[in-house]
Structures are given as structure tokens and as C-alpha cells.
Image 1 (tube, rainbow, N blue to C red):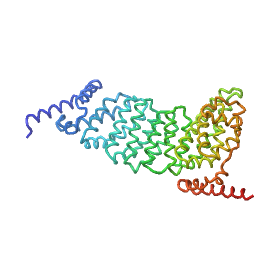
Image 2 (image 1 turned 90 degrees about the horizontal axis):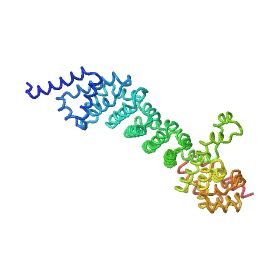
Image 3 (image 1 turned 90 degrees about the vertical axis):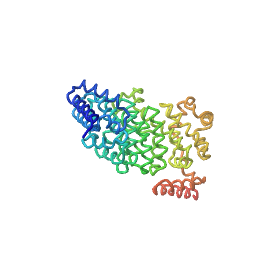
Image 4 (image 1 turned 135 degrees about the horizontal axis):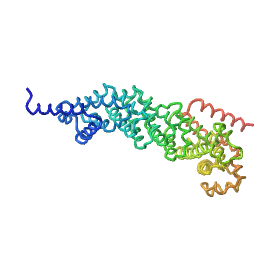
Length: 443
């Protein structure tokens, strides 16, 4: 038999549930306000005590109302926060299972894709998905099996709120950890986000990719091209994160392709803009420069990245010499249409000149004494001092130090680098130049 106190508690619960069942939208909103204010931060046992061991009866009502109303565009923030009190409570595994068994995770993911739903409500959905993901591996897998990565990534790209986007990053970071079955899916989803139009989404994706890359340990073939294209950004915070990821990627098998790609960006190809240019009046130089701006930004960022990599690892600097980086840096210094390209290329070339005597010799010979003196006097401000003729000299340079590297003793250290970090095709490439250099010496 139940005691009088227990009977009174059960009576209160039934009365509360009846009030909820009979209430309209306004009345239910007030009930939710009181519930949130009274129960925020409570543990599962405390919630059970509050509801006379019948808390699940209220949770199922909240879940049912969510599923009935989420497609109508009604405000959901209070409802989602109330559900969150149950799911995030200590010892709440029972509530979590009950929520998921009725399709709770799918509902939260569907909310992210609906245009009618407010951004604030979608942020609350992301927070609930964080709770689910943080509950263990099987819950992470459930989200991923429900096409969650795609839904979450698409929402990150389209969201207009930086605060919400940061919550999405937390969720993606959770999904990449302790989720071996689907971690590659998350990794690919992050790469797919890089071309999106949102700078904040690009920045957060790049940050999370660094974590994902260290966990997975292998690289996706498309990551090099995707990261290099991000360098076209006008946003310095995005460029910074891209270069940080590039610094990590040189430690993986994509290193040769990455360095080759960076050097190639120093001499932009405007094939991709030919269609745009055909619509531009030929004497409209301002419009042409606007069309070329993304490639000039990419050129300057590549020069900066090359300098950072070279300063951090002499072996990388040596490898880039074989890719004719000196020639390409000088060509970028001649781009009078973009001063930052000239500045970044000049600063990076200065380091190569200081590091390698063979580079100094070739650069001096190619520039001529007057221009070389200006360059060594203040490389950072060189672009302010050169005239169009000197810029043409730089742009048209034919510097090629590759063959002389083997004769000057750099070949052994470079071969060691390639053997440790690059594929057999690259080693064969070096061997070819060694033979060619020796043959010319004998002649």
C-alpha cells in the first residue's frame, strides 16, 4: 500500500500531466518556463523525485510535441531546452534511450535542414546532438548512420550565426573522436566544407581538420587541392588556418604534391577566369584586376606559406629548390598588379638567398647589381622602389639552380629527404637530374 504522502505526490503528477495535455501553446510555454527554471542542472534521481518516479511520462510528452510541431516553424527553443534537461542530467541514460527510440536524433537532424525554423532553435538542436554524441561511441555511430555528418556540415556552411557555427564545430570535433567506424566520413565531410561561401565555416573546418588528420593518420587525395584553393580567401583568419593545416600536411604522403602545388601558385594560371574575361571590355583594367584578384591573393598566400615551410625545415627548402621555387618567387615579385604578392615573394626569396649560396649567385646574376642591391637593402619594401622595367626583369627571369644543386653537394641531403617522405617517382626524378648533371660535367 502507498502512503498518504506518496498518493499526494502521484496526484500532483497526474494533475500536472493533465494540465499539460489540456493546455494550448501559450499555457504550455508557461509550463516549460517553470520547468526550466525549477529543474535546470538536476540529476536524473532528482528529476524522478520531482515527478514522483514518473519523469519519463513528461519526457515522452515533450518528445511527442516536438515531433508534431517541428515542421510548422513554431518556436522550439524552450521545448528543446526542456528535453535537454533530461538528456544532460547525470545518470540520464534511461532518458537518452527513450528519446532515441522514438526517433529523437533524426528529428534533431531534420530541424537543421528546415528553412522555417529559427537559427536559435537550430542551435538548441546542435546542443542536444552534442549531448547524444558525448554519451558514447554507439551514439556517435547512430548520428552518423542517420546521415548526420552531411546534415551537420550543410548547416555549418549555411548558418549565419558565428556562435551557432562554433557549437557545430564542437559537435563535429566530438564525432571525430572515439568513432573509428565513421571518423573517415567526418573527415571527408570537413574537406567538402572547404569550398563553401562562409569564411567562418571555412575557418572552423580547417581547425577541425587538423584534429581529424592527426587522429586518422592518412590523407584523402582531394585534400591538397581543396586546401590550396582556400588560399584565395580575402579573410586572413581563414588563410592562417589553411597555412597551419599545410604545415601539418607536409608530414604526410601528400607532401610532394603539396609543395609542387604551392610553387605552381606563384605563377597564376588564369584559365579558370577566361570565361569571365570574355565578358569584360578589353580596356577595362579595373574589372580585369577584380577578376584576377582571387588568384593574386592565392599567389601571395602561397609565397607566404613557402617561406614559413622553408624556415621551419631546411629539407623542405631544398626540395622546393628542385621545383624551381626561386624562378617562381622572382616571377611573383614582378607582379606589379598585386603588391602583397611582391612583398611576400621578396621576403621568402630573401631567406633562400641567405640560406643557399648557389641561390644568391643566380639571383644576383639574374637581377643585375642595381636591382640586387635594392633587394638586399630592404626586401620587404622592394616593391615600392622598382620600376616597370625592373619588374619585367623579375617576371621574365630564367633562373634554374636545379642542376647545380647536385654539383654543390645538396643532392645527398635532398635524396635523404625524398627517401623518407616522398614516393619512388620523386626519387627517380632526382636520379634523372643527377645523371643529366654528371653528363654535362663530363662534356
